[in-house]
Length: 356
Image (tube, rainbow, N blue to C red):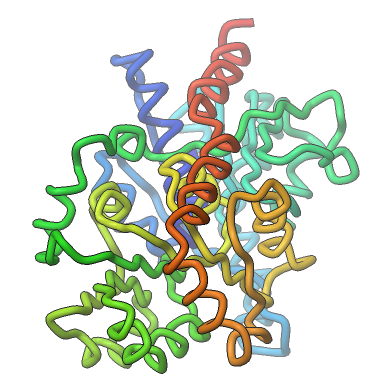
């Protein structure tokens, strides 16, 4: 299995592996990631072995790293072929990220069945290239035929962590875990696993506003920004680079501010929280806005562009937090969009590949 760089690629891969392990307890699993990315820590924490490749993405400007890319690619292809030859997998699964490219290419060359799982409404470059040769392509959004061969596409939804399906009864536990007042509302702020600069700036500038609305805050600022924002921690604000116990964070929350990465959107549909999406503008084809729009068009969330935050955020947020009926309706509508059986359906497709 390969997928990494961000939690949006790592956690779907882990969820699929967990489901397959429950079906095949004696199976052997091996993850392959980028040697300097977060999967090298997160995958072993989930109980799986991982091997790192010397691979990285291409920057949008002329850099030394770009000049090194051909050498890194050749190195990763050679190492991937060695991994395939030594491990001899029955199937290879990719969930996106640059490390999945060399591994799945090596698998295709060796005649091993491959499956890719695309989380977004607009695929990344690695999956678009791999889709031409993969046996199955499991997607979370309809109408991706312009990117992938229609005969290979299976609409499954995005895998989510099993613990997020079992939030009932965890609200008190979540409040206690984060040391929060059980009688006050909680705002959960999610900027993605690496963090979101503009969301962090927003939260820092609006602390007085949030306090005036009686809110406590669980703030995932991201590891890239933790040194800058940890000083904002207080009795009412929990600041952390990464949230390990996401089930407890969701259970504790009354309202969420979040980026609109595919995994976050899928999780929020499942846990059914009122959410304001602030999509990243720095992604291919504005796909985070498209992810969010799929929810807002169904009445399941509110979306604000970064360019709208200075003029519209406080008005929008104040109106929402004061309208319990509106918050309840958002909960109902977003829950209708959940695909809780996505992991099972993807595992079904994997079984078809290894048991033709």
